[in-house]
Length: 501
Ligand SMILES: Nc1ncnc2c1ncn2[C@@H]1O[C@H](COP(=O)(O)OP(=O)(O)OP(=O)(O)O)[C@@H](O)[C@H]1O
Ligand SMILES: [Mg+2]
Image (cartoon, rainbow, N blue to C red; front, side):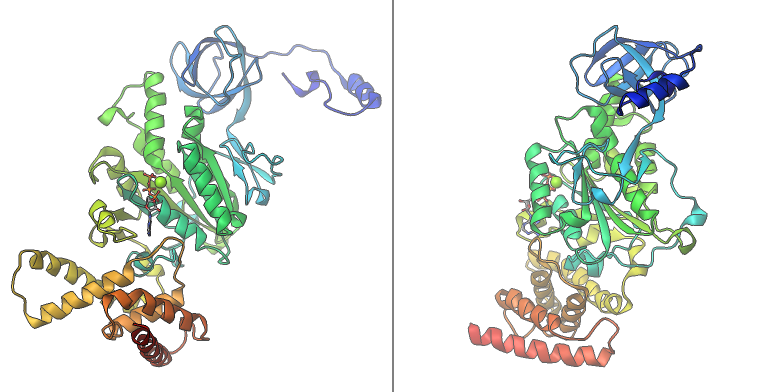
């Protein structure tokens, strides 16, 4: 149907009269298809010879679908609305539009589905622009190097696996080891840092969805975050589209020159949904029954995260995709794909988690391929020494398990390693500031933690953190000033801790 044939939506009789005056009778040609079968979130359609992939279709009951598969005979469409009215024989037409999402600043603090429909019971968010869900990634010439740090507030990450703005860092590990917690912590840490966040929840249980939103609200992170949800009970089509919708939203802000952080929680579920849709649409299955183009689906999504150069506004999109492994098997199909697409990974380990070391990040298997450039030189310098100590300790620790006799130097290394392990343990939602990171690194590298017992380390850290928050020193302050200050703080703090004991 065209505009001239549809009745005016509002206005009085005068408007109607004007519409009638302007009405031009004439021949209009439109294609009409027919639903042949429908079920499991997809529909097979006959007719519509000029339909193209990603076109939006409108069914006679007012619901929408999108073209997913073109075969010589029928069109495979994915349904976007849950409706009982859709049956075989329902008529269907093309809308001539492609999938897009209404984007705007009003989406901050809101929860929407992948089509931009409000899910939080409030009025529909107002929007500035429609952003296409599928679009090409910025060309190489528009991109810049990753040079600005994106702080997670997690001591282990910011010092040893630093993330830069525009980087794609994978969070990988078995179920329940704290992957979402790392992502949420990072979002919470962006408070006051002028970074907009988009949290995409794909195929999660309702309770997880509610918990995530409540956590964001509790830590006042919702005000700079948009949440895109397609929960487990949503149509598979919506679950498949969710990360693309989140990406489109992040792109909207990135193109305005903003720094954006987007979390995809998680892409394993996304891959499974895509597999389900593809099998229903009778596409040939490949490895682990996933369709052959799952790699390109995820690559297309993650390639859109980047850092734009100043000529293109200088915005950035940092992506934290999450993927699940089974029994720590990172060589499975989807995890290896994502490892090769991203710029590094943070690996969460079950043994560390059950051993009470949280966040359960396995440094030996985690890497950040581009974030080092973006790390502040002061933190980088101090963290380099500390990381060596830690890796050496992890190796030595294996020896001690066999009861080997150790030289004194090794014993010292092990003692320092144990201290480090205590320092690196961190509760959820207790982000460490950049200045505090520098302070504890200086303190550790200069043997500042040797004066107290392992049990006293959390208290010592807390006192140190308080001193840092009260000082005027910043990351650019002279090295000597920092060393002097840290020596004084740690001296005072360890005395206080000992007095308490
Ligand atoms: N740093 C931490 N300190 C203490 N507990 C933590 C920490 N990080 C995560 N946890 C706990 O570990 C559990 C699992 O965390 P989370 O839900 O983030 O993991 P996940 O890998 O996303 O799990 P799922 O497979 O359910 O998505 C939660 O109960 C959480 O409170
Ligand atoms: Mg999770």
